[in-house]
Image (tube, rainbow, N blue to C red; front, side):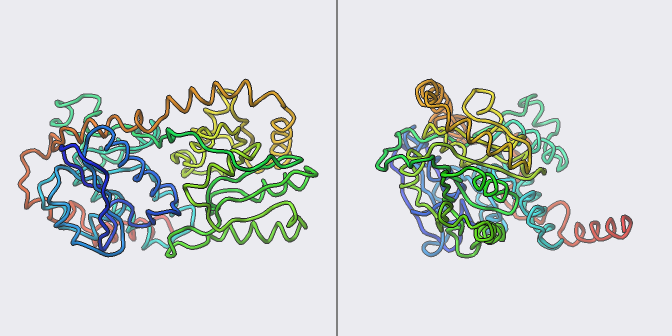
Length: 411
């Protein structure tokens, strides 16, 4: 994302490689990262900050386009793919909302790919002037990474002892316009799995729970990532196989991917959403996009314990938290929601208040404040532009060798 301090409107620039979401598709069918940057760009525009959202696959040279703006927001391996961005002398914001390192570990990626993710984070930590994340848990993780890479130093401490000027929280937000209902309620109850079936989730427990609830239907809103390079995760195939094994094909259906603009139709017609995961570091540091949409639609959620948003919904009486892998507890929770015929009334006000509290216009405030007056970090203000294109302080070869030695010692 490239922003200037001149008021204007949201614009698009298709470039050879993504500036914002290098692993995603920004368009009608968007996953969480694409939705995040589309909504952030729109919220910045509403604040009078002219914003250009750059996405793949073709178009102008990315560095040349970026050079025309006052600040940059990047994520993923963009700095490695386009090293010229580091030599522009433009204040650089880094988004750490997506804990991809833990996602990769949950996928079981090989060591070489894991090391690549570590290098990506190290380069971001070295080059960023301002960092944003989605929760206080993520901020603690980010502070640890910045400390390890020498960014929490006398200069940054003197500028701000709480380091809010270096890393702040910009959560995922809730859309301002309410969803429109066009469908009728399903007899017996409708459960939705709002989002993808990534390998760190647990749709199998949800399927078994539905099998024990006669008449209840369920739809999975996304099985194949809109980015062809990602495709369909292994867990989606396992979920389909279990549905077939249990003979539930007449009550459980799968959508390839629900377009962003039409997601509200299904959410409003549903009675309850389910979001289940397996325990792990990914869960602790994730910020579930799907649960924000449930707040937007006023849809109660049954979620596994340990998710920061799911636990918050349960604490506010807008969801039920259940133990990991407990299909009986999931079934009981779904039945409780379906049996509470008055819930739509008493929950509506709480959902509306939470949606207002978590609106994109509120959530984007720290980033908008920084982009309105972008600045270099205190420890980078005296750094020459040319130094930004030097190799990382720990070169890839050195890091690979160190990890190899650690493996030999531990093995």
